[in-house]
Each structure stands twice: as structure tokens, then as C-alpha cells.
Length: 498
Image (cartoon, rainbow, N blue to C red; front, side, top):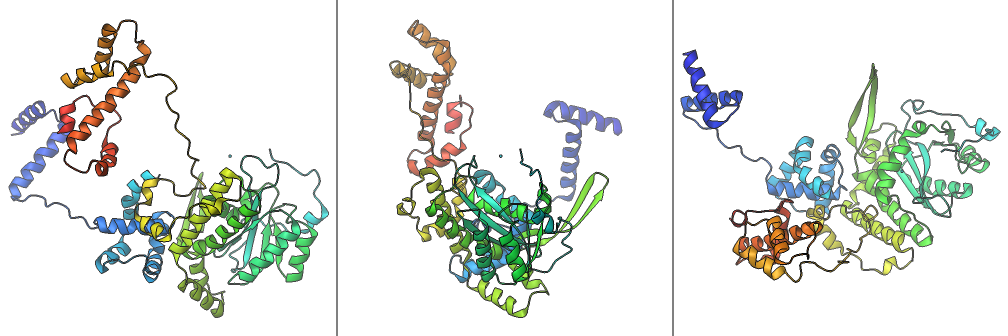
């Protein structure tokens, strides 16, 4: 029996060309199916296209955050969008959207993301004032109550620090991750104190301490006197140790740079637009952008293992904290009840559009340009991924395509080439080029073969498109057709038409 099975297996592999192990699996599977008399039923899709479209809208409204963060904010975001009339889902689709796991969200959004998808100076002598400020490292916080902030500057200088440019003052709460940002035209100590005072007035909880780097705009008599007068604990990081301010440094990149970009901003008009962006982003990030928070970190040899709390928004962490008073929590709940995340995202996109125009043009006529309609913005949430990068502050400026700088060498003989192609559709460009050299000696150089290949490829695409979409709306189907074309030259024209 064993010899017969071996002989059958060898004959099967010779006929089919299968690998030996694959042939064993195929034969065993077929025998098992025949013995049971049953066929494996097709797998039903749990999440259909309607669920996927609703998920894309939520992902866009959440500013394209990762699936683990989106999973946590989806109930809050969906309720807010339904409350403000931006989204209306069937009950069954709504329940399925909320039931999707983070891994499934990643799988459904993977093709969407794919499409959519820069010497340091040392002070020779430290001053007595700097020595008088206590040093706090990243490990010295010891789970503080909400109200202890790290503060830093983000310079919007482009590629050079020379000249005057704008800054963003960034404050991050250690306990909750709450972020406050403000636009500044100067990096000056009295202006920093005034800005901190304005931020304290709008905070939904009390401020107890400030941790800064060794910038002279922070370490000075004015700032130190203000903190002592207001009873704020004032500390600093070590010089040239960015990890001592890891909380605010993370927000500098994940929030400020993500929204504003790396371009150069200067002037009062740009400062006003930047302030509008920060005002909308403050509410959007703190109430609708979940973030990870480190729970524990352990070292095993050369490997560091980190554990994180489930993603949550800064507002949710404040509401869950026992160190925040009931009055403050009621104020936070009242704020989130009246916020529209899509409206905030629209304000952010509009400010980004103005900043991108100011960065390119440098004049103050950006507001006079055509402004996108709010209803159109909401309606495009399901298809915005097709445009790729949606933030104009990160999009490269449009470059005009260069036209032809040399005369077309095949313009005079193209009717002949076209006639040859109609007679022999499978002829390759190289054969046609050799025929042209015979037809018109000393007229074509070997380096011009690539030009002819491009023209022949375009001719085949046009003919194949006409054959496939004859009798239909060609303009509506052309984009889809071109997306499906391979980069390689299609030589078999009848196969394409089929």
C-alpha cells in the first residue's frame, strides 16, 4: 500500500508540477472532502462596504490616528458627529462599527493609508540664577497630580534660524497629557510670563508647577519672580538632555509639528493664523485625540519592555482622576458636550491652508483666496484619502510640469507607425524602430528607442480603453482604468481587450 501511494504521488507531481509537500496536502484535503461529502462553505464578510465607509469617515474625522487610538475614541466621536448631524448610520452598521477591533481597523484601513500614504552651543560658565533653580529629570516626577507642566518652544524658522520668525509655546501636563499651545512673535521673557498667565486663565484645572529647559527666555528673574509670586514650583532640566523633558518633546512632534509643519512663518498675519490653529487644535487634541501613557518600563538584559495604559484623551484622564474636583469635572463635561469634532477639524484645515499660502507667497492676501465650503468638507470625509496628504502645511508646492524642450523626432513618421500597429498590434516597439531605421536611413539614433516605446505604450492604452469602455461613459471610467494599468508595456492587445 505504501509503495502504491508513493507511485501515485510521484505521478501526480510530474503531471501537475506541484511541490511534493503541496501535492500531499492537496490529495489529503480532496480525500477528506470526498469522504465527508461536504464542501467548505464560503466565509461570510462580517464588515461590509458600508461599515468600511463609516470607518473611513471616523478615521478622517479623528485626523487619521492609529487604530488603537481610534478604537478608544470611536464611541465618543461617533456620538458627537451624530449629535451635530454630520453622520447618520443604520443601527446595525453603527453596532458593527463600534464592535470592530483595532487589528481589524488596521486591516480595513491599510489600503486607504497606502494611498493617502533635519553643533550645539555650550555656555562656558553657568550663572548663579541657573544654579538656584532645582533640576528635575524625567524620572523625578513620581506620578504627580494634574497641574504640573513641562514648557518648551517650537521654532517655525524653516531651514535657518536667522532673522525674525514665529514660535509656538507648548505646555504639557504630566499626569493627563493635556496640551496648551500659543503663538508668539518674540521669544522674550515678559511675553512668556504674559502668555503663561493667559494659559492659566483658560485651563480647566489648576496649575501647580512648571518645568523648563535652560533657555534664557525661561531662566530669568522675571519668570522666577512670577513663579514665586504665584506659588508655582519652578524646576529645570539638565543642559542638553532632551529626555529630561520627554513629555513636552513628544507633543512638539506629535501635535505641533504634525499640524504646523516645518516651514518658515513670519509676520503678524501668520501669527494670527497660527493662533487660530492653536485655538482649534487645543480643543480637538485634548477632547478627541487619544494618546498612550507609559505604565511601566523594565529592562531585561539589552531589551527594554514597556507597558502602556489603554489610549485615552487628556479630558478622559482628568475625568477619571480622583485629584480633580467635582466642579472641574462638571466644567469638562459641559465643554465636551458642546464641541463638534468635525467643525474643529474644519477650522484646523482652514488654518493650515492659510499657513501654507503664507509660507509660499509671504503676503497677507491669503484670506482673500477662495475658501472651501464647510458642507463640501464634511461630504468629502469618505473620499479625502484619494488625494493623499490632506494637510497643506506638509504638501509639497505644486510644480509646473515641464513641456517638451526638443522637437518630436517621430512626428513626421507617426502615421506610418500607427498604420503598422493597426496591421500588427502585437509588434513591439523595438521591431518598429528597426523598421523605421530601414524606412528612413540616418534619421533615428539608438537613444531614441525609449521615446518610441513610450508613444507605442500610450497608443495601446488608448486603444484598449476604447475597446473596454465602448458604449459607456468613457470620462467616468478613465480614471479607474488608468489606475488598473500595469507599469510594464502591454504587448498582447487582444488579451487586454478581453
